[in-house]
Image (cartoon, rainbow, N blue to C red):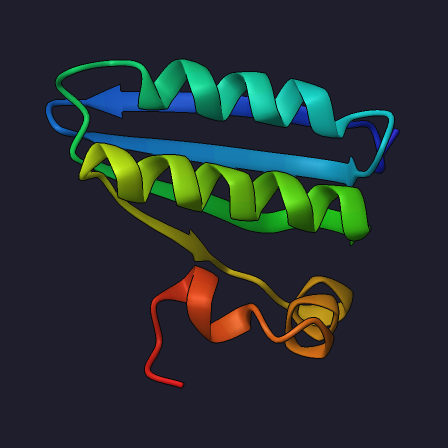
Length: 107
């Protein structure tokens, strides 16, 4: 099923790439939160990129999970950014005013 949630972590040296797919909502958001918490608890990670290219829907809970990950990263001195926010995912992040914040673009 295309909308089935999945998260894959590729950890290399100081960088972790977190690829997310499917629907990120109240039902799946805790799994993304746990994955981000696991990555951010590693002492050797200095950069985290969350790839949303295959996310088909992002609701308010999912946005909150991304923001919580960003905030935790900041307090740990880890660079955090979202990449490939397109379509409805991009629209949601623009509407809530977090596209530039989460993609590290000047606002």
